[in-house]
Amino acid sequence: MDSFDNFHSSEKAEASELQRMIAVEQQKAQFQAQVHSFTDICWDKCVESPGSKLDHRTETCLVSCVERFIDTTLTITNRFTQMVQKGAH
Amino acid sequence: MDGQGGAADPQLQQFIEVESQKQRFQQLVHQMTEVCWEKCMDKPGPKMDSRTETCLGNCVERFIDTSQFILNRLEQTQRSRGSSSESMMD
Image (cartoon, rainbow over all chains, first blue to last red; front, side, top):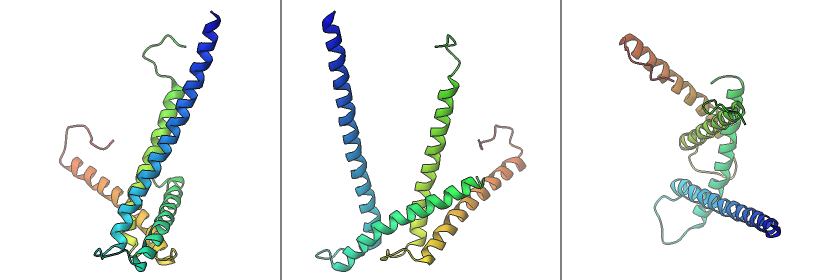
């Protein structure tokens, strides 16, 4: 019966290590999904016809695109939150 | 632990309701962000200008108005057709 306690604590340690690993992988996956999403959106906005290299104007547009898209998401979230709070549902 | 196998835990139910509401909210925000980004953002610039901000605000409100309008119209149509089946609007 004294090995029972050891079994319990090592099991717990494994479980929480596994939880931690899963959380890290989830975070990585979320980040990747976000990168894909931005690439999609900003490709559409910034790349007209693909040239022989990524020119400076396109790069600038891409940087602006990511930032403006984040701004847009915040603006819309705030406005929509306002509307919901006013009961315009 | 209650012995009522069929009865749901009200606390759990409330939790689920709140989480579902959050999810619906998030989904709408996502949808509107996509739609309004297309409508209002031409070429992304170095900063968010007031014209784009105004457009985004209008976009959200008009989108909600549009959904509501279509919903009302559909309900009207269903009523006037004397549909005996259950309402499709839940």
